[in-house]
Length: 173
Length: 262
Image 1 (spheres, chains in turn blue, red):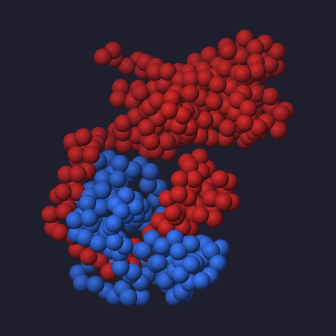
Image 2: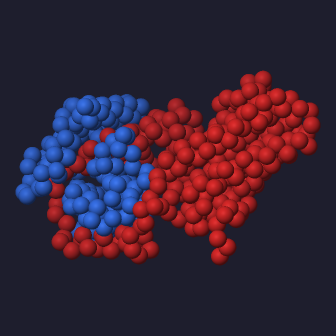
């Protein structure tokens, strides 16, 4: 990251090697086409370069910082482009445990994320996935499930807090 | 929106599922409320965990070179010089240390009472604050010819107090605003917190922060990084807790001290 801050091309290539796959994957899942996923990947690394000085390793992992940028950019794009179809719902339960030829560090990141989400019940994971991957608002979820809006909001918040705590436990020495 | 209402929305915001109609109010609040912003960032990081669980798709082989080219192009060609790679956080801390080290309190000790009685000296107080920025603007970020420095004094609307403001506008590091005030009535607890804002001509307003307590001279200092361009934000206002403007001023371009003439 120091290298990225100082504008070092090698550092950028290293960062790309580590994180391009999850960023591109998010583009594919949320935006639905290779072209859009490639543009998103490009935009994420340009944004990360611009905001490199804002990354604070004491506040969280580099991977989650980059994925937050990726998700925000993808959602912005979805909102800008009316008519873009919503991505297919992807539930973590349906995600295979291992996939192909990942670099070790990518696997470690993914393994850590899977473990953090294991702190959630299946219902909580599905609820968060509907919002995160499909962009369903709390109101839309409440109406679809026939439960009060306040209940959905509370559940979303408490589930996210569980994940945050799991991440904190994981990062604690 | 108050903090309670905003926090009710932060989970949806972190998940990218907040309706646009509600997102604007939340983002406006997050622009000035550090506590809610921190909470929002924490929840966003938790939400990002989800993304990392997806079974990966492989990007095309040539995408890496395109990304590197795009970053280079964004940087204006070539690598960014390391000397300019200073984080905004470090800069604001350095700036606060510099301002704090100017002996402001010592200079003002015993004089605040006189300033309250003599409105014209409040102006002098502002000018003095401005002079005291001189030490700060001798520091490297304020000397970089690519960074623009704006300064000005703040005048009281009721004859009490004075202050100064400085903004640093940079193409490569996070912009910065610092405001110092003194001579505000320390005994008027009801006036706290004071809110300091900067605004542009289009009416866009940014918060520099809140003054929650005053020192014995009725003084305080605020500094804030802005992840946006501060160019055009020249009007500085200090309001008391009731929203009444107690001090105002504007900043104007200032030549960088000791920099070579172009």
